[in-house]
Image 1 (spheres, rainbow, N blue to C red):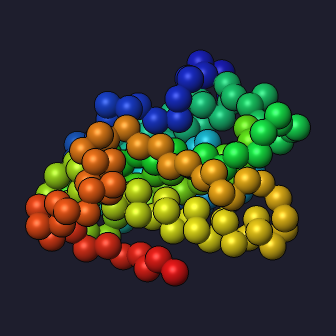
Image 2 (spheres, rainbow, N blue to C red):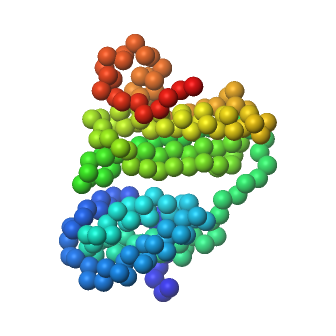
Length: 203
């Protein structure tokens, strides 16, 4: 409680590895704390990614993992006033932002998919999950997360139609990788992307 707060739940430059560095003596203390943080995610989605990372090292712990958990607690202490606000907006457009970190997990060499969906200015859906496959390039990782985000938008389109809410005809998917965007809009280049297995079916 007397420690200084931090502005982010996780160090963006930190790469946690299993059994790397000095081993942690009290394993149960770490596990109990991580379990409690998993319950907090329900009301604090802004720490979900950091908690998912520290949850991967319950069997091979070191001091670096404990310091990562303590950093999450410091962030919670300094961000008690941060909440999700759902208010009136001037528009009802559906916008999805997608991103992926290529080989974000060093010890399994898999990337992490991330996307969030907004209706108007209100955040209604978000996800951060490690990809099932080892991607060969950052373009492939971005293309996969665009696929997952498109599946979410299709499901959301059907839901909003039933609720008769939102402008489902103007749904927008935003990605920061220009090559992935170019491939998704030009199917002529399927020969160059034949190794990309799409785990989504469009209806």
